[in-house]
Length: 600
Image (cartoon, rainbow, N blue to C red; front, top):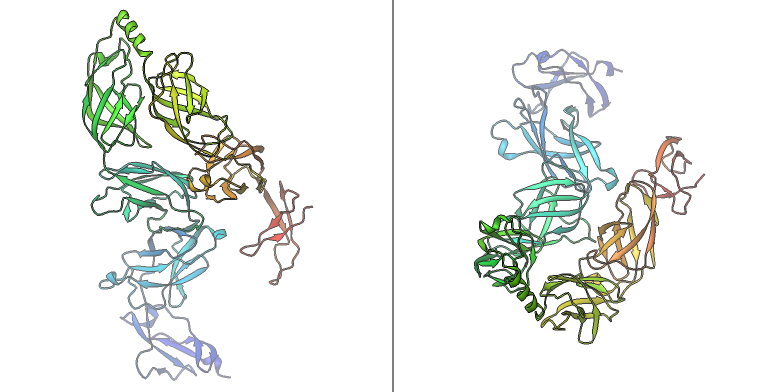
């Protein structure tokens, strides 16, 4: 009956009416510090049942501490994290803040709250930084939430409206180049999807963080490979990406992080001869170390690239191309560059001198000698093809003669006519062959001289695509399409599987004996395209195919009713555009399971 007299007092403040809860609990609203008439931020708290007689704690430990001024968040680091949670987030306050003595500090990520702790290293002066662990959110809840801090069990909360972005973990499909030099950084392009534009984007090569990372698009980032100590650091490492500079790690068990290899830097110490004919034909021998990945040479910044004819780790052979009569390299030396697999051309610090052009009579004599040239095969592209035949093979080398009888040999018994491109390149159609590795050679026209060494080409059993699902998706792409085989073992073991949607190729993110998983790329307008699979990095594709229909994006304009019972069962009408009458039509409410929908 006296509950209306129940009161609290903070310091020397006027009585404040309290709310009765139980014989052991009551609610009071704290007054301003000025109303307490106290010179200290910490004041005693007293209670009264009648508004006249005041009772204080016997132990003098029931006190209330005012903090001032109001807490204001000035920064959070990092500002984003994966929907799986677990990111350690530091929240910094302005210079006037001091969290020492405050109770029940918490971080609020949208509607979710987690405990926060004052960082110990800051507590000796005035605590201005707290740390909390971002809570887990489902992948359907990606997006931006407000991050605020509360104290005193949530009674006092900041209103700084700092933003924290939840993102889905990215998937890396492949990198290029897949190797680089230990002593200097290479620009590595990382391809995949789900990359978020962020100033905190970083890449990591094993334990080494990339010195430079750049966001290009949601499907591509560029990173600089770090320098390593060849004597201590691992040579083959996994490459990982963190959108926030902190959270690395594998999140999709179907996708393995690609590997990057650190190799010793190549070096060329001599070129013999160092003088070449301006009419071409000179064979130059470049000597050094770590040259096994060389694929082409270029003589002069403006020179034409020519293929490496033969190579070992310590020596490569290249034939400088002819130059025109007005070439600047007749007056000055040409700097020599070597192109290494995937990486590109590098200057080797040596130069070549071109001697003057020969007379027409001299050239005629030399052309007669060329008819007895022995062809050299250095590369065949692609070197992994289906055994059904009919694929165009690009054969590179030197000494090819454009006369009747020019052909490619497949093993000791199969010969097919070749199409002449240049003395360094011909094209041959692949014959029908059983699965296995076949040495491909060249037989020169006229003389019928055969290359001494061939180049190995792997033939696999051609496969058929039995079905794919789903058969349609939005024009914006992103649909996960499963394509069913079976597929040959070499397709599964090699990391070169691609899917082609019409004219657009994408790398597969999942491959096994019976199924290939690819993510449909975006297109500009609705259309139906062929879906094919390649086992050799897109050099050739399966002759069989399925179709995939790109359709206009579904749009929801209205929903009725907008409320329903907690137990579910409410029939909801959705109005919009581009709904499709299929057996897979579904609705999704929050994080619950999909429910079947009825097309009207």
